[in-house]
Length: 482
Image (tube, rainbow, N blue to C red; front, side, top):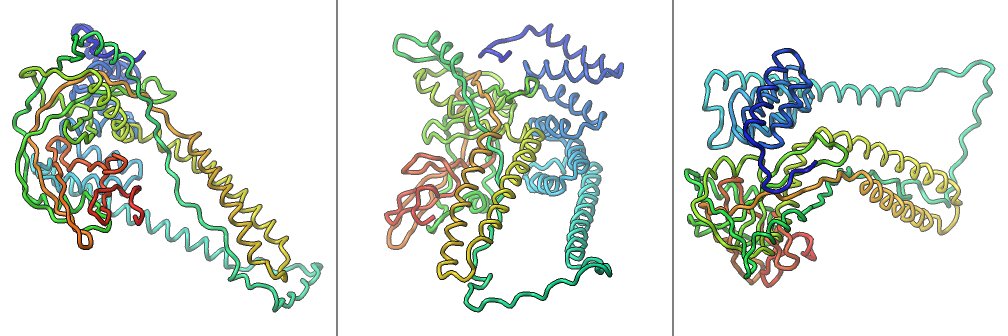
């Protein structure tokens, strides 16, 4: 059963669940311990201690996909050096070397890196990373050796024919009037297709609560928070600007960097994965009140900085509902990291079905191509027409399979808050041909990144931004030359 917005559970019941989980694990009843911990986290998703307990239980049972799922969630709420070491172990056990090294590199480059917390654990982490790099090189070498052996076996001639086997006929002389095989189109390689996450936003309960709380003017009172102690870290902001945005056909320069304050609507959203009742959780998102930019956050980010409201604001109920919908849709990005194991299984199923469809069309391509007369004057045109027909069928089949394997995730906004944050505002000078323009970018201390820029034509928020000849901001999809 999905929780209703603003539903609270008595603390005595939650404490009982926590004690039951500890007692079950001490008796070796790991399934019961996991069940109690999950039920507890469904009500208090930001309790780091219980998340660590659940991650430790999965670690003891060597359930590595489940350990990584809850371990990464706990680490985002409260990074610790020992937890980073255990997460690297989980990545290693699953053979996900590239993800482990990329994760370590991101943590190492953070200004508040956990490697500075404990020198001894930091040395152990460095040793673990060296082991990961070594095993990754060995895995790549084994893959290359296997491919080399496969190619060698394919190039090796078969066994000599038996004495009673009739001699093969001499090869036919090529027809000089026929098109050369090099001129014929070949069956193109299929590009990778990823599983789609299809969020379904349910705002019925939130809309009912807003309608009940709004006054005669249609305004709803929302608690307002002012987090303290957030560090803006203005150093190397230009490097982050260059790495996070991809500018298309336009010259840019970040100027006039300054500190400011910005107002956000904060939303906590419950999610449930299709077909898996126990696989649910909480995501968070911020919606910039001025630009409308949406930032997806891991669960617990807002709770870690918003301790008690300082006052309240009055907002239109319709505006709150619209922003809640946008926040819930953006929260599906965080869900992808929470359900990595389910996505991998769905991805394998999708790849298998696409490969089957591709091989069937490839076989039809070879059969029908062989039926085209080689000496015909229009043989090349017929080959291209056949290829175009089969590729259209392949694109249609891939689209249908991707739609059928999409993972449906129900997103239900639960709580609404109003957050005022210190941010960094930067002015970006644009130049394209003889025209110039300006826009404003915002660096957010909670997400630790720049906020996406809305397209001036379709309103889609993106980090791949360009400009028209008149220096109007456009996303990549709206640029005719992108």
